[in-house]
Length: 305
Ligand SMILES: [Zn+2]
Image (cartoon, rainbow, N blue to C red):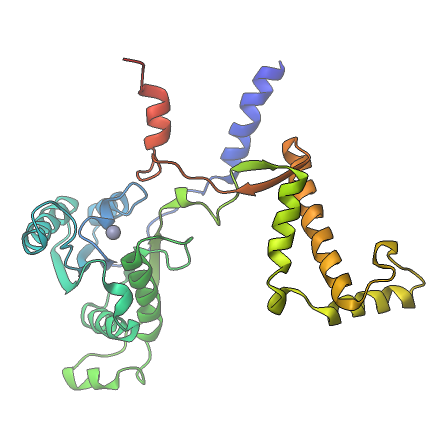
């Protein structure tokens, strides 16, 4: 029955780890704030949640922060217009009343001040007073898209600051009062990992580890610390201990020896875990990593011609 256990145990573990079903929070309105026209429809949410919220009585708006000029093959200006139109259609399908475009330049968000975008979002939160805000997860794992990172950060800050009257008090002159958003839903591309764990081990020879160690400590200015080596030896001496390998070495040489030892130690440890004398472990992505699920789909469906 070993084969059965091999299948069941992962399934049981997965079930135990799976998030529990939850009800929707009470409320009437939501605001979805995303960098691009299509971000609410990606594989990881929030399209289904939006549809369900509308079905259960919520009304919502979609905020497209950029102009999406780089998305498409129509040239920048036409891409902006086409994508804005398609945003309106897609959000309507989900039951969203209105799509708002802030029109920051697509892929240029790294260069704008976060407080400018944040101020716009605070204004929108105070104007529409949503019970729920949805966006990318600002604490999700690193997202390579600069617009995603900028918008998720600005949303998190805006949600927090919109409740304080001392933040952007000039809004009061427009009749906008502070607003506390009680509920948030954040989504992220989860196949990037919860902090990438290495998925491959690279076997190394002893010589390769030695060169790796040397390359490390050759940055003497930051890596070779005679004082640290001196303290190690003083602490050992106080306990009546010593490291014979360090006998006769000055503090700088001892520091280098300790760095080399550490490199061999970690390389041997990774090697033992992967069945080699020495190894390094890294996170590997291949040419199929651009789309979620593409690699397993190809593994199952691609055949020899
Ligand atoms: Zn996007």
